[in-house]
Image 1 (cartoon, rainbow, N blue to C red):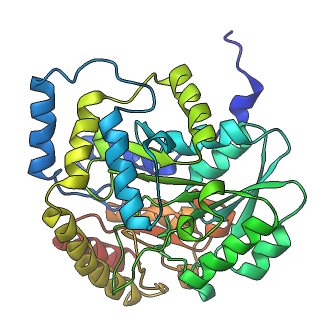
Image 2 (cartoon, rainbow, N blue to C red):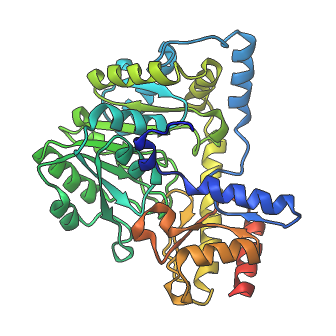
Length: 386
């Protein structure tokens, strides 16, 4: 028998990929599935980015690179973050990783000891809780409430902070709810982080996916926060580059050295030609990226109106990302029960709210990173099943 380490029992998963596998299995049997479960833009990567990758391949960017990232790539990211967040970032503060998840994992591995408490949003991206518990930390959920438009309740946050609290995770715009922390929210969060000497992991992967005139506001722009914040961002969502596996973290230089060491011990480095494509993504023409956001907004309006017309559904209009998180308590069914019913009977793949934590019960998550005709067809299928 293969010996399995006890720590593996503490490791969670990302249910979206499990539901995707179930949906694919049903498709293999001939059932037509509309995919609203996976957080992946249905657009192709913009042509200028693809051409940059092809050129990089021809120029032999196919070898190992420095573990924290190619120097010109780190410099480009440092300049981009400096410009968009209104702060000063040096290339030495940037670590380029294969996707955004390694920044979550490496930061928690580097900073959290057994018994340390980490406050994280719930419902929220499931890898936060998984990584915290895997390293032996205590995952402390901060409930995001529908009546607060899924923003932080600052009074609740204050109550959760103890002398064991070491880190706070924020995600705005947020997965799965599409909620956005206001500038005032973030200022209050920053004040608490400074007062209690907390490290902040700020997941800003959806920073470019905002609607209705909202502007992304980063906690790093508040005086005193850059030196205690790890900013996570990447290319998957903004540039439809999910399969390219390209993300990065911006952090204090001393922590960047430790995160680099973890990268050396795990994945060595990030693909060189992919990094070159990332430079083109940040510095090249942004028209296609902006058109994606415009299309997401149109899809958002269609799916929100459609869900609110369904019996037992109540759906807030998200201000960012590309997810809706409708309240389905009016249907009389639990989240997991209804998500499985919709997959098996309606051929609509979505996620149970509980895939994002215990406070997700009573909700479903739909990704509207799919076409309007498919969204409209999915809504009709759901209506018939209900």
